[in-house]
Each structure stands twice: as C-alpha cells, then as structure tokens.
Image (tube, rainbow over all chains, first blue to last red; front, side, top):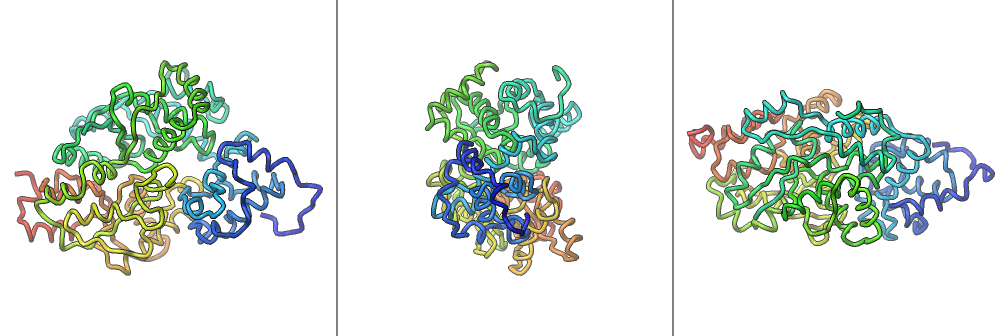
Length: 172
Length: 301
C-alpha cells in the first residue's frame, strides 16, 4: 500500500458503486471508520499491511488499482470477528469477499484459488479419491466415494467460472 | 434422528480418524448417518473467485439431501458455513433462488428449501442433548484438562446460525466437553482463528496465527486441544511440528477430535478411535486413561 500523497485525478469515483452492486458489498458506504474491525482482526495483529478500515477507506475514495492489485486483498481469513462487531453492519467479511470477486472479474486472481477451483472441476472435490484411496477406505470399513467433476464443470461453464481455471480434460 | 452425512473434501483426504470415530459414536446416541454418493465439494474454496458459483454448488448438494428428505450433517466447519449460508440466503431470497434454480435445472436438479444444515457437534448439542450424553458416558474424563476449539465457521456468522451460540463467548462445545466428565476451562485465546483460511495465500502469516493459541495452551498446561474442524486440526495438529521448528519452541500438545474423546468416554476401545492418525500422539492421556479404567478399554476385546 502506498503511504504517499493521494492524487485525486487518479481516483475512480465509480469504484464504490461497483462494490455496492457486488453481492456482499452492499453496505460499504455505511462505514464511519471507527476501526473496530482493524482492532479485532487476527491477521492485522500479525501483518500490518492488512488493515480492514484502511481498505474500506481506500475503496470509498476510489483507489481501485491500489486495492484490487494489492496482495492484502487476499489475506482475509474469514474469521467473521469484524463482521460480528461492526457497529454499522458493514458486513465486512462479505465485503472483503466482494472485493476478491471484483478483482477476479478484472483479471486479477490469486494462483492458489485457480489451483483449488481447477481440482474441484476435475474430481468434484479438492482431492481426488482414486481407486487406491477407495480400497483404503474399504479396508477401514468406510463406504467408497465417487470422484467426478462433471456437474461442477457444467456449473462453472454456465456461471462463467470456467474462465478462471486451468482447462480440465474433457469428460473426466 | 436421520441425517445425510456430508463429508466434503478434507475429511476423506486428511481426517479418517474424525470420520471413523463419528461413525462409531453416532449409533450409540441414536443418530443414523446416511451416505449420499453424489455429494461434491460444498463450494467453499470457490467463494473467493465467484460467490454465485459457490451458491449453485452448495444448492446442488442441498437438493440431493432434500430428495432423501434428510437434514444435512457435516463434520467440517467450512462445509457447514457454506451450506448453511446458502440455505439461509436461498430460503429468504426468492429472486436469488430462481436464479440458482435456473442453473441447477441444467444439471437436472432443483433446490426447494425444505431441509436444515447442521454441524455434527450442533446435532449432538441440540438433538441428542448434553444430558443424554452425560447419561451415556461410562468412563468420565475427569482427570484431563481439555481445551475447546470451536473454529470460526462453527458459530459465525451469527446472521446464518441464529440462536446456536454467542459469537463472542461461545459455550456449546465447552458443555459438550464437560458432558464427557472433563472440567472444561476458559482460556484467553478460545475463539482465536487457526489461520487455515489463508494457509494457501501466506503460509507464514497462517502459521503465526496458529501459534497464538498453541502458546496460550502451553502456558495453561492443557492436556489436549479439542477440535471439531478438519482444517483447524490441519493447522494445530498437522502443522504443529512446522510451527515448533519455525519459532524454535516446543508444544507437544495433542489435538483430538471431539468425537474421539467422546468415543473414549462412551467405552469404545481406543484403538477403534484411530488416535494413531493424530500427528501429535496423545500417549500420556491414553496411559492415564488405561491406568484408571483398565487396559481392556484401550484395545478390542
């Protein structure tokens, strides 16, 4: 995050409306910057660059690039402490998710999420349950499980999420 | 009490001890767990990419349980928050429900909004009840200091879970632990986040977050941390050695699933509860338990 002077000409005044239109971002403008979120945040307690109050101020000001292209936008651990404590019901955890969803639509996506979403499209789950794993399950007296990605691939294709993943092999 | 048993991704891959111990204790408490082979990932990992896709993935799973007329029970906090949140939103928002159903139709499914989604611990607390568990306990765990770890998504957001628990000072898991005869205790970092949500983003920050609780438990001299989430256990159990190495310290704090210690108290032999799969071995606990109640409680008779 740049600590320098904010250049008003570089601000995107429409960014806040882009956020309030995104599911989860509706209550952005309610924030009165009390800082309860930042004071409560377990990530902030370790990593200074993750500062929910500051992220919200930057978003309202229209610092679109600084927010979406930052590393910190991905750092929310979704513990919901800020969301529970926020006196203005900004619904901050969901707001942080909305920012991530907007970043993705702008072509900025953390590689960790590409990998996870791609695995799920292949196997229906994050981790494949292959024949060997199912044999092991049977030995432990556990029912065997399916590992199919067909439905997920169809869902991704129709919602457009397939754009963000590595292409799975056909029909697997 | 019949429940559609939702395993998700992490349980089959990394937590056989949790699944096996749950399947052992459920029938003893009158819970029937039904497996649905077509369940897929709850949708949690995709929410950061596109929250609507997650809603469709969750609704697909819910619709499978609806078809069977069963409520869903999960073992993972990530699964329960994703499915319960989707269920909550889709029940209350007709426009969204129609939009999701339009997508589900393309895979031959429909969300109706006829069932509930609960975590297994919530089923134990609300549907079985603490009193019934107390009555069923044969070997009280009174000699052990067992620290409750709820995990954030078990009881938050409160907008989704309603009356389940207090979002600042939760008590339900403490009461479940007390039901096994163990004196549960308050500790400062009880509701601390494990950091698991960002392990894939920044391992460094995530491990530092997990360390906060382990440091506290060491000071408190806890015998074990009691978990109800496979991903919290990844952070505190599977990663405990890495945290020790990274910060040049030593914890050796067993992290056990609630279903494992309840199984022990109910009289299920320890070797059937798969403690061998916990990374930090609860050797001292099992030796002490054996000394008190006899060796036959530890192995199959």
